[in-house]
Amino acid sequence: MTSAFFTRKRDELVPAPHARGPWSPDMLHGRLLGGLAARSLEEHHAEPGLRFARLTVDLFRNSPMLPVTVETTLVRNGRRIRVADAVLSTEQGVIARASAVLLRESEQPDGERSLVTPAWDQAPPAAPPVEGDGWRPPFDLWWVTPFDAQGRAWMRERHPLVDDEPLTPFVRAALAADFASPLANTQPGGLRFINADYTLTLARLPESDLIGVEATGHVSAGGVATGQVTMHDTAGPLGFCVVTALANPVIGGR
Image (cartoon, rainbow, N blue to C red):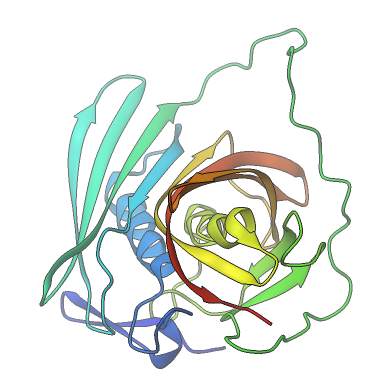
């Protein structure tokens, strides 16, 4: 088994070297903070019949490669809706926060929907992933379209998040959702925006370890951007992710 991104030591989660992000060799990758938040929220607030329908992750402070602690709080516990928050901290203070909404499952309404997101026409990858130049992501990645085109990619985690714990479908989706920013915000010459948050919305959890991400929108002005993607698995579309981002020195340029 490949090594985990974090090792638990008492109440802290200690990052491994491959937990760094692409922007700086001493900076934790934001996707992992979303994964840690999802992991703790699921551990403390999940319940059979309640489905994680939204996860918002605020990445408002760059964090060095320091041990992380995660604390969760139950905000609302109703019959059909549950809301819980998570706060992620290091010895330097709070580095991120997250909010989750869980909704009660019920009978699906009959009839046709006026608007339905179609299933992705791209088959799952059959060949091994190809390693690119520069920063190499610590997950398997198959580009369906070029990085500087309208982004479409399949991805698959290859590391546990904490110790040897199996990744749950919700944590897997939370990790993949951060990839919405590079897909929606890239341009010829490289990625010029770094995301400040992301909001993942799910109608269902992924059923496979492969997750497809398809950029479906980008708007930017004055160095501020918003982008959106559709999330897929091998069974079809499962949700969406929206990000906001700030202009930042380019990475991935040629």
